[in-house]
Length: 265
Image (tube, rainbow, N blue to C red; front, top):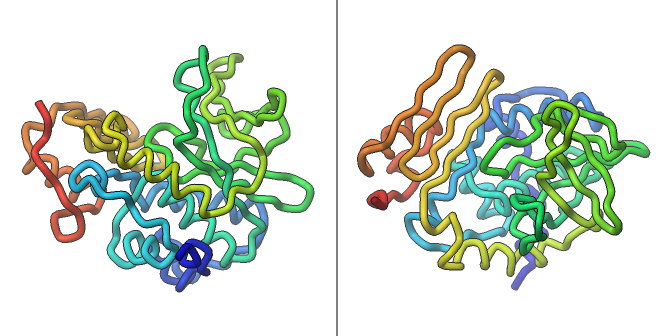
């Protein structure tokens, strides 16, 4: 019943083409890991349209994820994108595993785990990677060595490891996790909860995000924001038709491969 969660990636070469690295030589080193990570963030969008528009619980079967993201040119949310990314890294020869994460939106409490990341081990060093967060995320692998990497650093707090964004000399925690490999089947109930819980943000608004080398483009509900170099655009989307236009133009996601519904007032 769950064997499809453990299947190998069908075609790594097509995945490389999807992220703009067709024919690239990928080694199992930090430089190649960062190259793949950056390319993924700039070609495959975060999108929750299946959950928001149709109310479905997305499949985490590797072949289903491959068909959705690589073959059909879609994006996905954390459990989809990071599950597929881990399978991709394994196909390239990396030593990688999933970790279940808590999001640290409020420092006064620890929320129910609703995210996951991918740990990659290269030599004696471990690195945190994430291609499935709907907001700002490190675009290089963060070594779990306590040093600052790309504006982020890791640390430990009891049994937990955290990754924090550096704001000046202060750190703001983003992710909290136990550095223990999570079995793919352990993501199934978490995926179900965030997609089917009526209070989940994925049920209440469209969320799309894509990185640029010099900025990003973001849809949150009716809000559209783009920052790219000196370019700044910010406006409210009027209706579903405008959302479709923006999703197609900026994220490569259109009515031909995704579902939409009317925006809430």
